Image 1 (tube, helix red, strand yellow):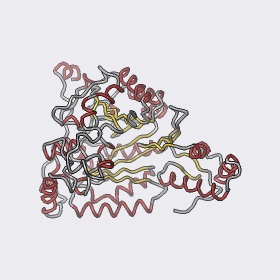
Image 2 (cartoon, chains in turn blue, yellow):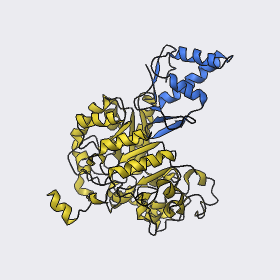
Image 3 (cartoon, rainbow over the protein chains, first blue to last red):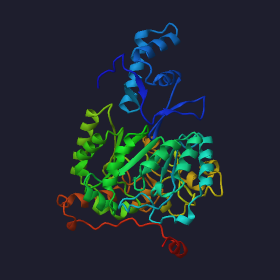
Image 4 (cartoon, rainbow over the protein chains, first blue to last red):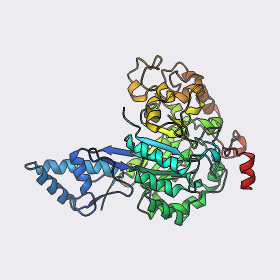
Length: 93
Length: 376
């Protein structure tokens, strides 16, 4: 599968959403499954609304992790989202 | 102790279909024994409090419950992720909208085949055309949508057409599940178990489609464990991940645990769910490794497959505490090999049903005389 473009606007697929039961541990819920999110995963998932481009998400995260290497943030974000896309949890609009 | 990740709620054993591989027990719970709305809602809250994330509303056919919308809303209010496992029979656009509005997250629609006649023969009722129309309506709603097809000797050669239909319907997820041999399916095993050639061809087809459709459709494929080298981690391990409630509120570690003699199943009518999960003798019986015989006890795979399936051990080998006989290391593996040999020594399966073993159709829960009179 090709790498998503930085202009694409990722969004959680229909029926995929964040858990609401505990603010201490948020899961990404999907059909018959759940993914335990770490802090970074949660930040990314929260930005997958279709309103933000991949580029904007990467910039936002780089800023949040003051001084992080932008290239590395981009690589990791794309990897994470590509894996979710292959599981049909994220759409690239 | 961690709570179960998922609660499987068998809301009813009533069903308009009569599938020859139904996972319900041979002894079905009658309508008058079903839990009422309030009890189910209480249980959903108790599950969420234990950390449970998902509820599978299933049956029988869950749509047979007139309070299904209330149950969906209650489960969602308890902050559970709500899956509905349905044949779609009894679902129209108005009711679908009611369920979506109530907070349904995911609908799994079962298909018996892609050919109408064959599908209706397996289901024992005409339902296929309705399912096709319904799929279009579901796809337009903002919920997750899975197409589920159960495969066996009579339809596994049509896996590619099943995938094509799923593509046409533009579903997110396709689950192609080989029949697992419990309950009604075990009764019909001689007619349903595919040959090794059939299985290998289907695996090739699925692999190619998974690669081609990556990112568009997720395809989950469940193989028949009779052909496996090692057993499946049934239910993710006994009493580890899931709890199933039957329509009467009895808590079971899996769909068919009722076949194992000597197990007592506690009911949510008498106990809180958390007590059952932690203390019910049925859940403790095969939890962990204490119960394990050799070769499981010293096997490196025991933390992956947990010794396989207890029900299968009982149904095939007559002892629920022995290694799952599908395991190549199991003392009883020869019993599985015997079945496989029989299936594979026959000529290629004939399309004509007259030369195949007869099918036993799933019945419906027995009704008392009083109910029957009321219903008539």
